Image 1 (tube, rainbow, N blue to C red):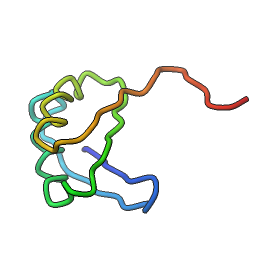
Image 2: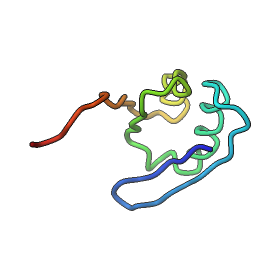
Image 3: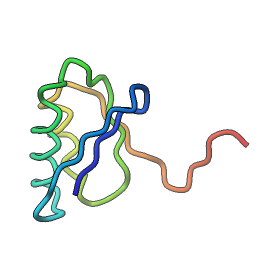
Image 4: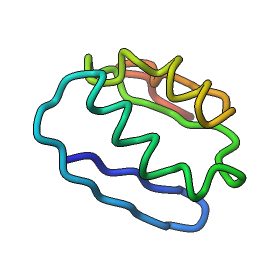
Length: 76
């Protein structure tokens, strides 16, 4: 399962993955976000191996990509 959510609008998309490998995850994310490409300014991924193809996703969607910093706290 892949979940893509927008923190500002609270919009959520959920997709089914048959395997948790990077190429399939990238293809599914691209398929899910292509209709919303003009709204995708940046994407933040967690540190899972399934997002190893983040550069492909960024290129296809013409967006910036951030990788979450593990164990990072914001504020106090």
